[in-house]
Image 1 (tube, rainbow, N blue to C red):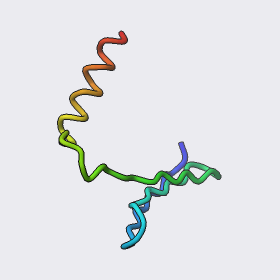
Image 2: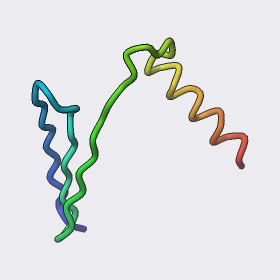
Image 3: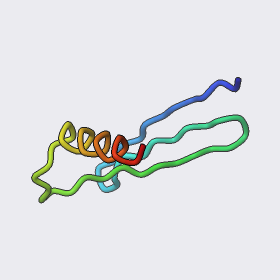
Image 4: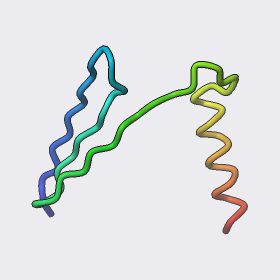
Length: 56
C-alpha cells in the first residue's frame, strides 16, 4: 500500500485546499462552506449517513 501524504493549505483569499498524493497521482480538493447555511456540520453528516442508509 502506498503512503498517502496529506497537506492542508489555507490562504486568506482562497478556500482551504486538501492535497493528497496517492502513489504518483496528486488529488487537490477545495473546501468551501456557505455563509448563509443554517445546517451545522454535524447536521450535514447525519443527513448524509441517513441518505446512505436509505440506499441500502
